[in-house]
Every structure is written in structure tokens, then in C-alpha cells.
Length: 105
Figure 1 (spheres, rainbow, N blue to C red):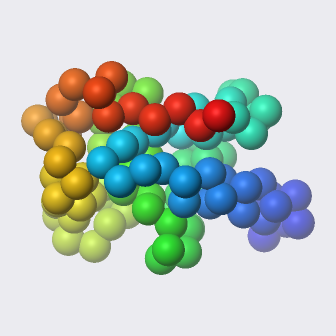
Figure 2: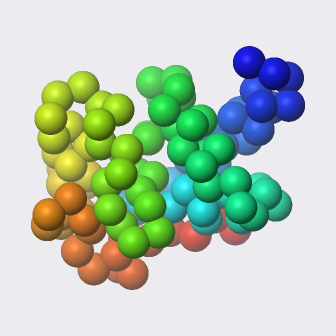
């Protein structure tokens, strides 16, 4: 992994670790916070390779869809983790996203 990419990934992980229990954020919101608007896919790549202490299940796409769920062990682990935190999911999408959305600041 290139040094710049490694540094960016570490910044992504630092932000993701701050997402409160029962809240979610988006790949784009993390990218924007890191002054790297337009790098949502890079945030996604970082989340695909994140350490175990990073709550990757709390990062979804801008519409609240569980786009990263196929990177979790088991068929519905991402959904189960979010539901255990009180987040309601229907058809792979967060219900009432505004209530659960956390914007890094």
C-alpha cells in the first residue's frame, strides 16, 4: 500500500472509530470531513480493509443502503450489528436515516 494511501486510510479509521453507538455516517461524509470530497470510493476501500476495532458496520452509502454488507462474515452480520444498536433496517436500507445519521465535525 502506498504511503499516502496508508495515511488516508488511517485518517478514515480514526473518523470511523468516533461514530457513536446507534449512529451511522456515509462514505462521502467521511471523505468531506477529511477535505477529500469526491473520495467516497477510497473511503469504501479503506473500510473493506479496516482493523477489527473500527465499527465498519456504521458506514453506509448516502442513501442509507448497506452497500458494504458483503464484506462482513455471514449473510446479514452488518444488518444484525446495526439492529443490535437500535437501527431499523428494511430491504437493506436504514429506516429514518436522518434520526441515525452522524456527521463528523
